[in-house]
Amino acid sequence: LRASSSESRGALIVLEGLDRSGKTSQSSRLLSYLEGLGHSTELWRFPDRNTSVGQMISAYLSNKSHLDDRTIHLLFSANRWEKRSLMETQLKNGTTLIIDRYSYSGVAFSSAKGLDIEWCKAPEVGLLAPDIVLYLDIPPEKAAERGGYGGERYEQLEFQRKVAKCYQAQCDSSWKVIDACQPIEDIEKQLQDAVLDHVIACERGRPLSYLWP
Ligand code: T5A
Ligand code: NA
Image 1 (cartoon, rainbow, N blue to C red):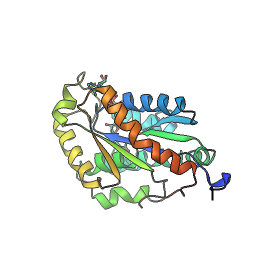
Image 2 (cartoon, rainbow, N blue to C red; image 1 turned 120 degrees about the horizontal axis):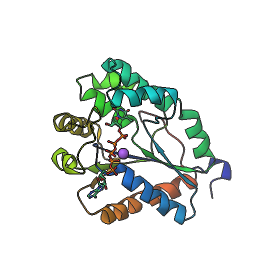
Image 3 (cartoon, rainbow, N blue to C red; image 1 turned 90 degrees about the vertical axis):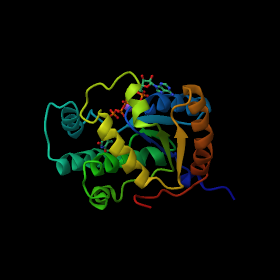
Image 4 (cartoon, protein in one colour; image 1 turned 45 degrees about the vertical axis):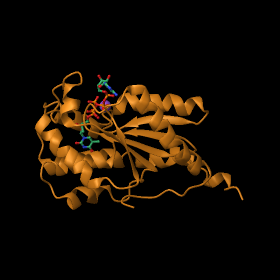
């Protein structure tokens, strides 16, 4: 039996990785690929710097403001919560969302500062869980060589090494880990192969799930 059309939905696809791992380049390629196959698809990113919370985050990242570590953590989380209902609406409308960074960035970057990982995960509880996490795996030294860091707050080799460890602490068998040092086109192809089954499963009615599954 085919799933009824009301259960059909878009897929929630998340890209994660260190700064300069290639998330933004690959997200837009994945968008073109899925659109080309006729799937309604949107590209989102976190932080979403367009909201008022996002503007506070942007000022913090560019060192124009200074915030307590827990305060900025909760602002990043609030920035996801303020988009949650639209996210659910779009998925239920059948639109696949490709998201450049999500809760795993929130947990990795804050726990890299020394905050307790369970404390970091708590405000994310109840957000929509991704259907697939695509992790662009790059040694911090290699990432640092790419076009130079632009000077945002976290773009420092020592800190990115800690973030890499904090991503490892979250990575499980549900993540698709991709060697991000390969040529752009090779990575692009591997991401295409990784997402298609998920997009089809969601169209056939895979239920939504919630953090942390
Ligand atoms: N953050 C974020 C938190 O602390 N908590 C949170 O909850 C969230 C959501 C946001 C910062 O905020 C932190 C994490 C971040 O530090 P951002 O705006 O998302 O920052 O910026 P970045 O993710 O750091 O974006 P970058 O542009 O630095 O990295 P991308 O998107 O991973 O990489 P991309 O595609 O822009 O590529 C970087 C460079 O590498 C080249 C590209 O051409 C480009 O020059 N490149 C490659 N070169 C060789 N081979 C390849 N395969 C390449 N792929 C890309
Ligand atoms: Na980016």
